[in-house]
Image (tube, rainbow, N blue to C red; front, side):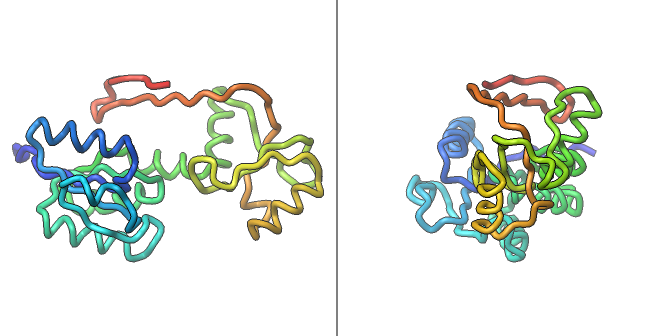
Length: 207
């Protein structure tokens, strides 16, 4: 059965430069673009696109809000902009085949959101061997610390001693098991994105 062409596209977490650039390019190509963001101060609401203020991706109210927008705007494709939204959108699309989304497979998303499990998988595949320290007592300093779940640089610190690690745990109210604590490697950091379509065709690498 032939699927109807996608015309109505919803971009979430739309306040960043990337989503806004995408929205403008899609509009030039004739798509009907709709924006949504969790911040009432988002610039996305002032750029002439239909806009909706929605709960953040981790909220239990997020998915009902997205479903309401799909109904209101007849959305056919969703471009989620935050990690916290990915599993919810993947579940929605699995339940509603008429709605598409630009995201990886659900199992891939789940594997990548848990940084500790991801590093174990990468080590098994001989891609990276930078495993986390298993206990507080085994940590070698300096060490890089970040939450198991999270994005960007939120909660990232370099700790120089067991005392600083204890301070981190107290500051963020975390247990050691909720952290990724790895050997700190000094130097420049590079981020590389590999963009692949749903036919497993490489579209671009961005660094």
